Amino acid sequence: MDFVSHPVPMIAAGLDIACIAAVLFLERKNPASTLAWILVLLFLPFVGFVAYMAFGSGFPVHKKKRFNDKASRDALYDKYLVKYLNIPSIEERRRAATPSPVTRLIHYLDREGNGIYTPGNNAEVFYDGNAMFERMKADMLGARQHIHLLYYIFRNDRLGREILAILEQKAREGVTVRLMYDGLGSLKWFSRMFRPLKEAGGEVLAFSPVVFNLNPHIRLNYRNHRKITIVDGQVGYLGGMNVGDEYLGRSKRLSPWRDTHLRLTGPAAWFIQERFFMDWLQGNRSDPEPAQLVKYFPPPLPAGPGEGLGVQIVSSGPDTQEQTPIKSGFLAMIYNAVEEILIQTPYFTPDDSFLDALRIAAGSGVTVKLMLPDRSNNPLTHQANFAYARQVAEYGVQVFFYRGFLHAKTITCDRHAVSIGSSNMDIRSFSLNFEINAFTHNQAFADNHARQFDLDLANCTRATPAWFHARGPLARGISRVAKLFAPLM
Image (cartoon, rainbow, N blue to C red; front, side, top):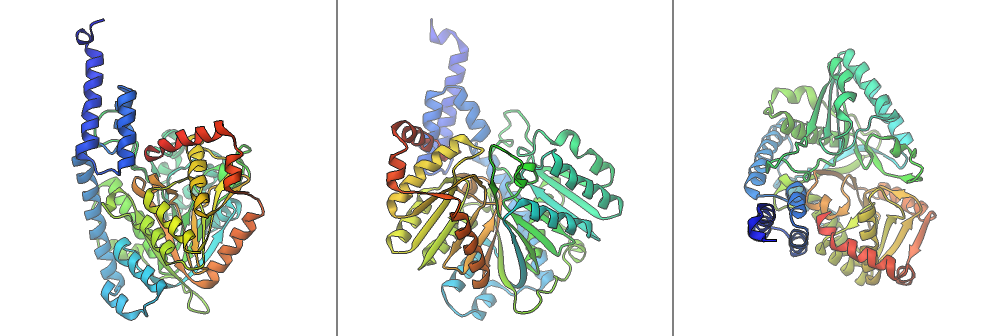
């Protein structure tokens, strides 16, 4: 068969070559990711091209313009909000604080992640979806002015329908209801389930809806992985829980399901609300107006006795350009730790900088404990988990596998600093997804969270280097192969 006389192989080869050139000369990927894409494109002709168009970064001129536009809108909105709330400048906040490892972390997140530090917050942490959603539903039923929701996954199941019924009721009562869902995470649910809410007066919007064509603007990457609810601008929720029955432990295959979610009142709720509007304005392409601020950013609920909890709300995503505020915040926590680091994550496929931080911490005498699930909803990533977990176990990190599905995304350092949010400890969350985390600074709060980690240990298996070796050569080989694809996950 004459290769030249058949145009299909030639076209496939040409497309793959174009993508390889884009990966090599136009994108700014790390070497592992670059090599992984080149291998896929070389050994899977045309299939590699389709995968690259769907999941690769793409030709960066479109990406750069798209996310620069969003960053510009976000900066404008943030300017309005900071002026309205009369927040001191970064320099003023820095001069007012006494230097210490804690204040260094606060200043870093302030400057690099736009995580404005607010004292006087109250926090409730939920480790069970049933309790969390009951509390959230009660807050929504009590709403008087507006309810805003943004979720990566919003399922058309029992819990989803219960939440939608409340939103429909409140919309009919005259409460402003806005619901945003990720265009891929909720792809198969959106067609009919939101229609009654729209008919009741609610607004529904997809973030980055998926369109199946080869337009470089439309990709399956860059998903909005955030999970937030804000009621009347005074009560904010964020963490690991989407809207779906599995988060209530109703998935037999993944039970028990362990997750972590945070309810915040106080000035920190302003910045959860701000993040919602930044993403909402990206979706409906309208510009922010200063007149909105009076309505949507009311005075915060009082913290009650004591000074309350210090909180920074930090967001990251493709629109933060070369900065990676949440990952960098994790690294700052790890490098500042002198006693103990506790990490929980369902997906552990970190980059070299994160692995180096754990290696240095463990080698410096800091107790580092990593907790992962022993089952998962993502088989390929789960196999890669084993390979990376074995690697850090060799560094001296204590690795534990939770007997169930651990979906919590938290890190606690020195019983003082805690981060709870939507970001996994993986390359996708660090560089591709839109994420949001709360960084808290309070010893009592950190102590309580560390005690929950200790309770979770009772349902864990300790994984030593010998334990990993005992898994057998086949299992180890599968994990190593899965690890090769980690930069693409």
